[in-house]
Length: 568
Image (cartoon, rainbow, N blue to C red; front, side):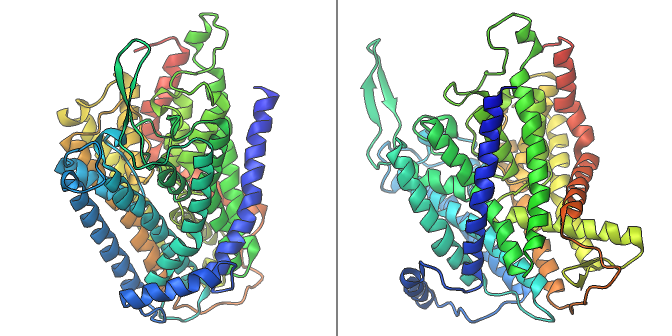
């Protein structure tokens, strides 16, 4: 382990922690209606939007109406994106004349981008037209991220309102998330990316002649604009099949650093926003501390595993035994391990290295973070509301230990909250394990696997985990563009998103109706380092109990066999 590597990792952690504070304060001001520096420009635009769309911004929704509105809006988005792909061959801004997308792939892609997963069973530069990339995929990058943020804000209102009957207005929360937060920051990042060499053009692909005299087609397109929101919105779907390993998407170590900061910025900032909105910053700090503890642990394991490399390679007495297969030389081990940890912690799915080539323990960490529900900062909005579900479970467990009715923020945690919390945890977990089990025992499932042995099982497990966890990254050894995987993973993505989102809104609806109880001598404090450690422990224990047997048969067995000299 090099001291320069430790300095680099420490610098990144300190940087995103420092940036989270002002970002969180700004977002709290946006959602609580306080004045911001963008108000003079965006307030008239917001009012115009409501007038044209017929939305009454003063109308407050109960949790049923809020949930129904979210579902109708998202299902409509799936249908629209599905249709755009089916007819893209007849639409403009298609300089390469790409044909319509096959229906099962189009359905998988539509569900993927609307659920903020961005799983891609296709090569973007050889499948999607410029119009589909911009009007279809990039638009959903904004809207899917804003949906998660809106639901989080609704949950926070449910926690802080007393004996209320409404959670706010989804259309207002969605609009403010896009106009005040996602769009301005995306414009800044897109301009910076473009200045650093990320491609941004609507021109046709370029044909060049190689030194050998052959003709090569070089894909170009509106990349920088999509790159910005794919990182900021925890989306991850790239213009190019190689994603953030492609030099047109991520040309230098500087753009790599900016990309990782963009991945972490809003999810980490929302934890600070939570503390401001509930009126007790220590609540946000405790949750932030739990997330940071797990992030540092996972990053340390991933980096050490990649830096150690494969003992079989080390035995050849090569100059660098580190695991450089599948990694870009311009990033190296440190930036690759950091990117892997960040992208699977935050439900982003962007990759700057091939996850299929990770060492077994590093692949184990990536898979575990996804299977935990990607709550280690997690996706924009959905990461924090997923972590709050674990907060309720932690408080409930503590209540059982001390013989008191569990409380959080002065409100009792009762059977309704626990039932919905358990449902939110179990639904994605069941989808992962059942889907992977079906794939392992059927020909349609195993025929897509490239590698034999435990690594092949890891490829299947990772695919279903990535779908249900709404991550979108993949072990590339699995061919997912088949009818079985297109439909099966689309189902997992849908349940993984809305099987958590709806129970969360139900919890919000239940909590907003309750009275606030003054803290007493027996009230357990949900602030401070002790609660942060306890929360992290509950998350890891639940994950271990749910997924350890499957992970033991995949990456853990592969790690042990690798160190015993076994190859496949």
